[in-house]
Image 1: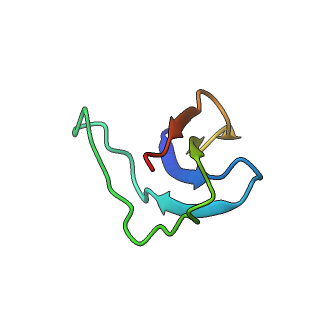
Image 2: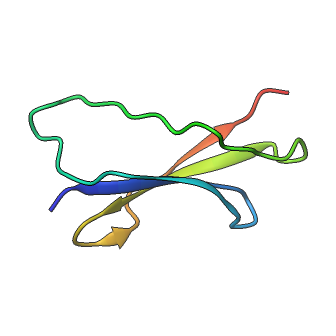
Length: 69
């Protein structure tokens, strides 16, 4: 049971990018991972970052981030 992905989602539900984690990172706490190449249209003013875990799927605490313009 571990976090195995996260994604960037627009207000309309469009998924702009997903980062898959292929193994647990128990010994790397805290750990960070990047996601490059995400293209978000200029008209989008905020995105939500959602997490996925290997047992419960998508859900849990999501974070909404206002994008600077």
